[in-house]
Image (cartoon, rainbow, N blue to C red):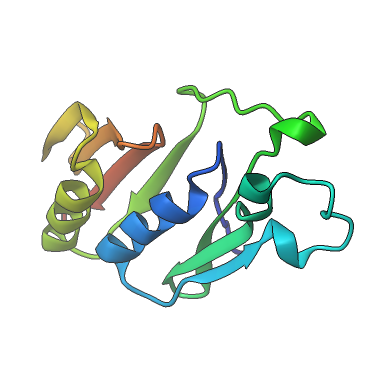
Length: 139
């Protein structure tokens, strides 16, 4: 079983994923609303929105998203009810991902050694997505 986080955006999914690509690397897959049948009635702006975007983030897992289409009754309600939690392979990788993804965002808990023994930090990125970065220190 694989867990693939799926995010919704309000017209800036492509911008967010170009940023995520700059941190994770990998090849971005992007389908626009204009590629779907029955979207002729959408505004030019909405036809340019992301219908589906995905980015490989390791070992067969993908970060995925789409834009909400207001004219179709879809309304984005950003909040802190979802986090993407990344378990890194090294402390250095944790530092690199935390630094890259939190750029321009709001740090909730800086990366540091925690009482439970892990190296952990959390933040909200500049697109309103909440992240947790965790490395399990060797015992």
